Image (cartoon, rainbow, N blue to C red; front, side, top):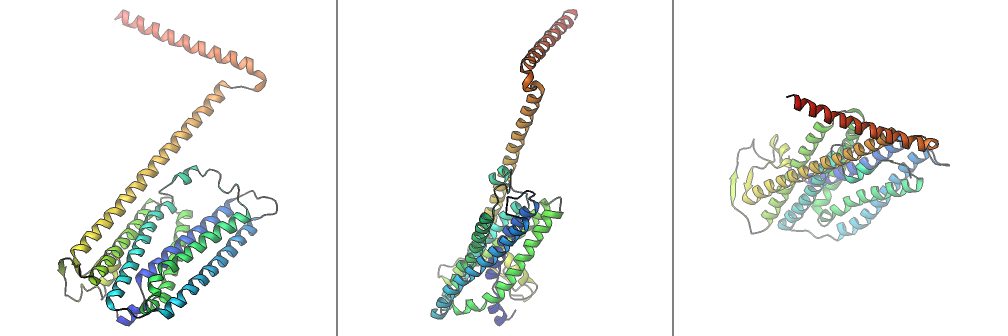
Length: 350
């Protein structure tokens, strides 16, 4: 990959846009799915009105967020000064660490979107869409979409401070947006078609976790190069095949591969990877506990319902129902006495 091409594309910017666009698309898809499945509507409101409200809110919120980002980016881009290589490495390192945090969050959210992980809100959400109104749709969709698009601008602030960083934003944003939309459509297809989503969740979460780990260790490595407090270099591979600037090994660079490795990079790589594994284990255990509690609550509710049906009667026959209940209780006590007597006789015979 030539240096000119590398200056036009930045993987950290691409991942930021992919994450935010994916989250925004998941929000829109969930609302559209909810509206398409809703059967009853309030007076003066229809399914087409709700879908139109989603589209209008999405477009308007995106335009407002882009206008705000542009208003902030233009002055910073015009007034930015040329930084030396050390400052550029620090900015690139910070942007990679921010992208690593975003991708780790995405790795934890992917199983939730696929229904593998659950939360208290998911378990207790029994009557979805009962209070759905056009006003609530407009506000919730507009707020969430504006927040997702505006977050892209917040994460891009370090790039606005350097002229070199600005060159990589357009292409990286287009590629990241396309990736986010494709992933959102994939999640929508998986939720509607796949019966077993566990393997898809495992694959996607593992891929995103290694991607986050590679970005974190790479960002820490850039900051290490920019400072004088460098750690010992463990290994360095000089062969062209293993170079991170050439195919095919450059494909593995976002996932943590590098032809040189320092002590700090090794510590950062394994620490971040173990952190992601621990968080996934915690989410899985929490989901299992919530599902078990929900199953117990449903079981108790079913048992109470059966008990009510078995001992309860019509409101007009309360006296007869009470007599029947007492009779059933006496019959059960009699059966217990008979069982005791029979067991006593059998023991005497022996």
